[in-house]
Length: 423
Image (cartoon, rainbow, N blue to C red):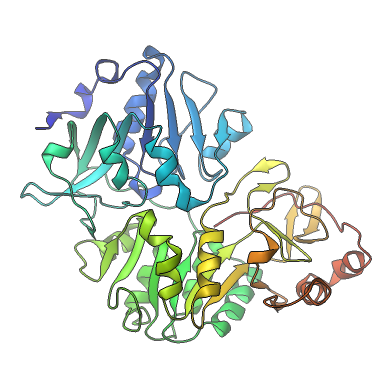
């Protein structure tokens, strides 16, 4: 039976062991009461390390008593990365459950209580649910503001070692910003998406602009690693019904809920929304079985052959390998599917405006050109499927910013990208 403690009574020095490896929920699923208290007490416990996802809640600072690892450079992780205190795990998102199960000692969760002895995973089930069975110690923040979400698994008090009850609202997503380029890209993508398509999208200004551009569509579905604020917008507009999904008809499926109050209201006790584990949301057989599965992913830069860098900009790790390859492969295998990578053609930073369509990537190849499908910028759409390198090059030049096309055509580097965001 779980031990119940008040937040102020939670003493990690009595619960943790030296060199414990800790995993906690990311984004809106971060148990911020627990993580804040852990970080304030971590100096008393030698050798602690933690795996973190997108960190929006508790500010992180390093180097300190704890070592941090993540699959991404989003949110507060960028502070750690700038300080050289973040170790990146460069893997496909579908691999995370297996890799983390080998390492986890302590699992920190943010749960919802139904008042009858069952606990929902709240805003994230994804790679967390399997870790309940692997962790030596499970500590849960149970908040009356955490949404109760349907999913493939719930927990009982027997699954949890320590419960800390709070009234803390879920951590909200950072404001999404979309300019003229993002709006133009969204219009291009919306023109590709058919009614009845099942969507996968990321997070950030560009994905939110794309979702907003789809409000006039009908019978869209969702099967995604995450559900963002724009998902609630589509549902309210009557565009997201999931009626034509060939897998899980009538139900929107995601592993993570990452947004604000509007999204939390949409998912709370909604039988038409369900959280599933990463092993399901990112599974190739499930994705390929979805008719018109449409994967929409962002990038930092794309070269003329279709190789994608979604990780490094200006020498800084700001993105992730993420689930792009998983979803793009699923979309390519889906009947009527669309594997889409979208990005503005340029980025403006301290050194001026630079092209994000490049002759050679300035970071790692996050998605191979063999997995490239449809590349979209504000200047148009380049469908690379089934094309050789020469035709790919021509089509990529057509969607580059006009002022950089001569340099690209000559095989020169127009400039090096100095910023970007992987959604």
